[in-house]
Picture 1 (spheres, one colour):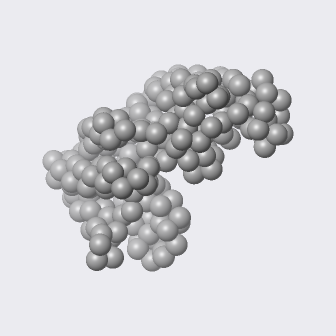
Picture 2 (spheres, rainbow, N blue to C red; picture 1 turned 60 degrees about the vertical axis):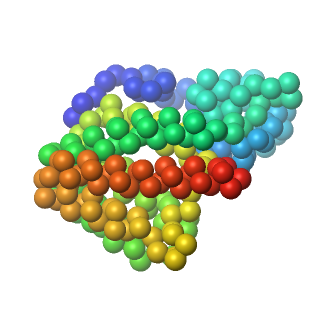
Picture 3 (cartoon, one colour; picture 1 turned 90 degrees about the vertical axis):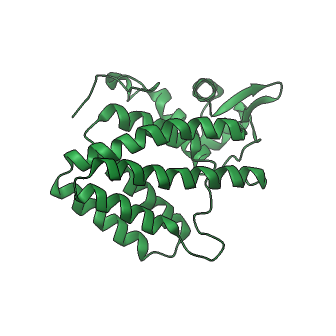
Amino acid sequence: MVGTGESPVGGARGGERGKPGDVHYNRIKDDLIHGAYPPGSVLLETVLGERYGVSRTPVREALGRLAQDGFIERSARGFLVRRRSPEEILSIYEARISLESTAAALAAERRTSFDLSRLEHLAASRRDVADPALRTRLNEDWHRALRDASRNDIIVGFLDRLDSLLAMYRPARRGRDGADPTVDEHGAILDAVRGGDATRAREAMTVHLTRMRDLRIEGLAQGHG
């Protein structure tokens, strides 16, 4: 498996992961990703310090890092949770489609029987779940399992970073008729990976992510992002 001594995308080096400042950074980042602070929200050091039970200094450091990472931006009132433009979403997806379609192709060439069992289990679990939040979590787990099967830590690291940038802009996955094309799309990707067909796996992932990109752009246009 490809690996290095540091995160490939703006993360801390392996020996720094336990720094106290990382705890506050990760807590605020997780809350951002899970919708606690919608796009356009103002983040104040004093308010966040009270919420997380810490002084302003670690909060200030965490907000500075989040601004560097593109989650928030400085304003006269403090920090603002960024509203991404359709152009930004398109740029993020341009990178994601390229990287994750490559991961799918590599997975078709490198997957093990354990990888296939993991992907099949997650796909089956998602089909049987009605709760939207759990379905989203299982979808994320499925994509992570697919990426892990690529055996390329660099690609996985960059995709994790792109996921974080997109997480606050989740599209509805079902069509107007109530159907969820994700099930069939994941099935097509998995069939290609199972069959060792790298070209077909790449194409199937591209189709899937292109549809998800279009749904996110549609959501922004309707004012849901």
